Image (cartoon, rainbow, N blue to C red; front, side, top):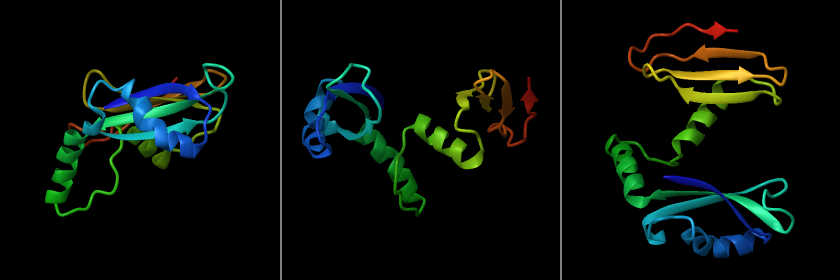
Length: 146
């Protein structure tokens, strides 16, 4: 899977929809017909300057998506969306934890095991950390604060 921030000349959403496959071919090392492609226009000023817009481009090989969705289908379920792991982790975090808009959230994998850690840092640099349930043992793990 590939996620890339690209800069393009400012255009309407309709113009972007028509040209995104051609634009994506410049950034994706696979045949464009072999990938599922999605994109999102990023709001705010472009990193490339005036007259440009930034777009978040995501591409996944169709055979990988088919592998994932076939497992879901074989389980008797109907897949409705497939998400990139990092985005899915962010969405799960936002759905389960409350945080202030000014907080910076860092999510990552604990290197010594199969635990997912998160840390919340405010603008004042006060950080807290909490470790989620261990995927290996399905037991809750201790929270830590500093």
